[in-house]
Length: 171
Image: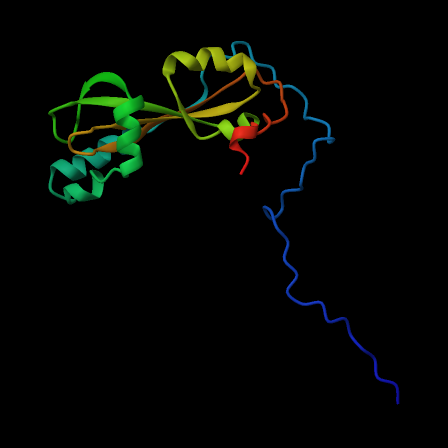
């Protein structure tokens, strides 16, 4: 009697995001998106209602201060050295001025995605990249209040390949 052997391949692992095909540097780029003004924010999401609700909960005693005023140490350090004064008082402690941080994210930014940029740098970056997202976070260094207040996209709509990783960033 002949015995058939089955394949013993088990536990195969597929790396990467499920459902998203891998793109190589040879794949054609998608068509350009028409953008009238690359430096004008598009797809703006303002989180003012969520912020107002969080502040109401905080000031009416519905939450502990620690639920809203526990900023990450790295966020506080970034606010200290890279924050831009917003000119507003902190809504939680009402003592010190708030600072804003502008984080930029995008596939085209390559290794520079996730970095903090000054607000004045954003219009100059817009024509250099097809699309990137800016997250604006307000931080109080006194009571550690932090809240993402706005999100928007910038760019000229022309897809580009990701920036290469500089040699000094390669491990």
